[in-house]
Length: 165
Image 1 (cartoon, helix red, strand yellow):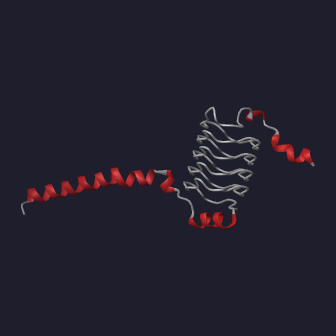
Image 2 (cartoon, rainbow, N blue to C red):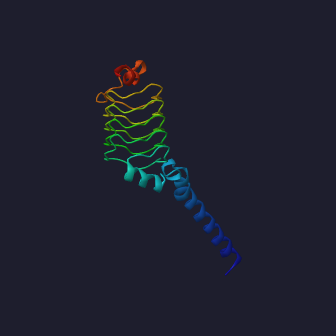
């Protein structure tokens, strides 16, 4: 083998490695749903008990599930897929739902006090009677079928339990 062919092989190998890193490995490392995947034990706990306070469910596929009345207080649901999920009367107080897919989700009567829904996709979602005081709804995607967010800034419904006693 000549020195010229050895140099050419090294350059070819270096080019191959840089292509591998830039096209395969780097996107995986920078993808938040891959880099911060949901905890398997937290997913198991949620499916077993319907409760997962403080859980890491970031990037989890929870679409089409019935999580009615689930306790997800302080849960990390960033980038989670909750499309078509029933979260009616669920406790999502102080949950991180940033960039979550809530498309067509049922959040009717859910407790979303101090929850972070920044940049979430809430098209066709139902937030009627949800408690939204302190929730961050900056950049939330809605459409004409999204219900219950019309007057969320003036929402005082989170005190209704106190008034009804």
